Length: 110
Length: 116
Image (cartoon, rainbow over all chains, first blue to last red; front, top):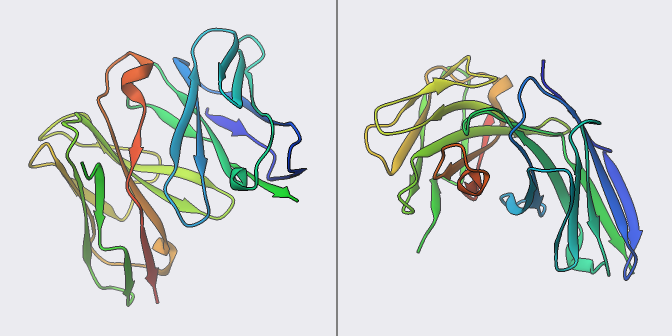
């Protein structure tokens, strides 16, 4: 079966650091992707992890542990514009097999 | 460069009516997808296509049909709309294949559909 879990909502303060977790149990694994989705808009790609470890892209970093079925997205120096939903998605053994998690809605407060 | 374009952006249907949602991409992508997004449930895959002339079922295909007659277009049809199909529909495309970098999906702006 396919199961991906994320916290429903998180709140953080402008300038702070926040970690959004994603746990997964899927029948195949070929990468984990993170997308950002502002309210009323389309998802946009942030990052992906294939191997264990941390991938850094500016203020955003993503971590993967394949043995634990666990990933997190780390957002540093939070800005108001980071208020959005963050979706993790697992790519299966072939490119067409993508399963998205329910998303985490992040609110950044002044 | 328009990317992925969906039409229409909004639509209200009565139960039993039919409609077609159009997705067009200008990135020469092989793979195209249709998702629906409901509160608390994330994106769920309806149907997908790995190339012109091919289609396949996703997680929630019942009540929908699709066609990919041209590489750049992917159509989603509702033959007899039901209130349970009230949702936001997103189309996405990617180059496809095994490489992760080729499977970054680019999404259209979405179609908000209400079935009364």
